Length: 189
Ligand SMILES: CC(C)(COP(=O)(O)OP(=O)(O)OC[C@H]1O[C@@H](n2cnc3c(N)ncnc32)[C@H](O)[C@@H]1OP(=O)(O)O)[C@@H](O)C(=O)NCCC(=O)NCCS
Image (cartoon, rainbow, N blue to C red):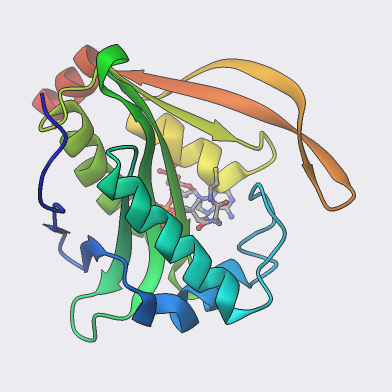
């Protein structure tokens, strides 16, 4: 199936998933500049709004080149960015991609990512026709590991000492979800 020509806007009960724009940079900096939210991310927290602008420009280029779909998670009322949700390294010939997600700490623990990650997975396995979605998470990131397991991802292995962020070296727990397993889960509700 072809990569979408127009950016897919998706909605859940609480938030809207829309394209990022450079006007989101201050709100993106709030999330990506927070050491708590970035504790297990593959980069140090951002310090300057220019870094947020650069990330936004990069993800917009990613959509234009068919590599990624990066959603801003935005409040339905005020449209302000409170997080991000990405399908990236989309490889249509191999029918696979990776997924990533972040929320500002004020939105944690309310079941929000469990509400919206299924929208991205439905899109990946539906409209994009993918067969496999992967996630790479720090094994110590309990919320992320639980989220993936809740979605039916299987832990497939550990890549040791894979990331070097600041002075810290960390492992990757690699998770994978296959289309038939996702479709079966959705059928069962
Ligand atoms: C990972 C993240 C997106 C989860 O979002 P969330 O909306 O808070 O998650 P949910 O409320 O949907 O919870 C998902 C599961 O994790 C559990 N959980 C949430 N926070 C937790 C925590 N701090 N410790 C342990 N488990 C936690 C929930 O209980 C739930 O499990 P359950 O289904 O068994 O009840 C959020 O913590 C975050 O943005 N973290 C920072 C960015 C990040 O690390 N991203 C992942 C990079 S790979």
